[in-house]
Length: 409
Image 1 (cartoon, rainbow, N blue to C red):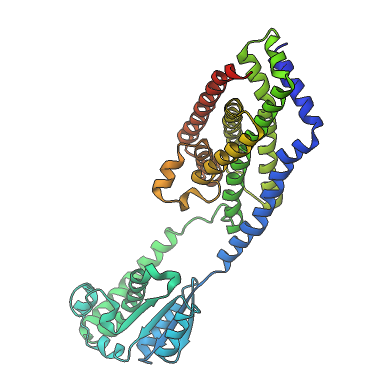
Image 2 (image 1 turned 180 degrees about the vertical axis):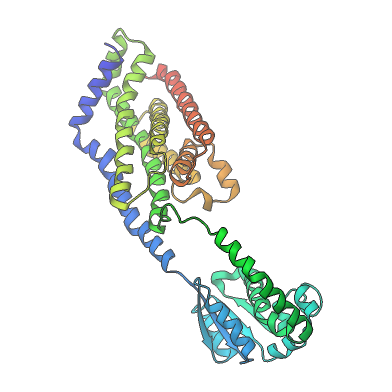
């Protein structure tokens, strides 16, 4: 008997066990569909529709304050709502009906009229001091954007500078006339430069938010479920140990390494089929993009599956009972999935957690998938390094499993 015969035997047994095939392939596929439809799609739709709600209280009611508000209306990311007084605006902010409250005080136009050209050109000095409060304008953020008050104030201040510049320059007729002449003289050249520097038309339409979401959801949960094969491998080994199959295999003319390889390869094949089906489902059901170099997915799939099945072999040689499989196997798989970024994008994790996740093969698989799926020109050095690291994990797990298999009786 050799490794190929053991592999063939186990594949035949697994193919007859429909429940195992269902759990290994169909259940993860159904789970990805549910996660993608309920979480990914809803999340993407919410992101598409989301606008930050800006409440405005205009106590000045001048042309200058109106111009500032009109500029804010031009921002597509903002939904501007006017309030008659400060009390109603504060109430809306407290009830989270708006995210930001902008209050333009009654002295706004008076303070603008006091400004000189120097104040505009040196906005961080003079009367302005680089703050919107110098113009009787205050910005207050609600709980949704509690840490962004300073940033929002800078945005409002920059819009205010745009709208008041003309008013301040008009106070100096000679300067205004010189600027007009300079503008008229430079306009033809500006038009020519604009025509010469027109950006080329986009080659392809930017991916929708819906597609971007699935670029993260599908690889993340695929990697997580690939490593669930650890539990099934451990149960398979325990079952064969209890039935005496492993003892009979030891009597056969085959090395321990050959036996371990023969027992591992069937699960490697199932893992590859599982991964391929999940990525195919992401493409067909959710419009997932496989990137500009889809062939690069195959080595990453192979290395990830090798790492998962080798981990399964190691766990199978460490546990002794079904209860230990449930306790240790599930704890190991879920913990590794949690810290690696399978359950949420790695970019959302704190820097410390991202570094900690590198002790798991999951993180290296996710980094490689991110390069292939989300980069127009994937960094081949990163993909190769991730694959080599996954193979190193696989080699380490297999070595421990091979060494521990001596103690299996």
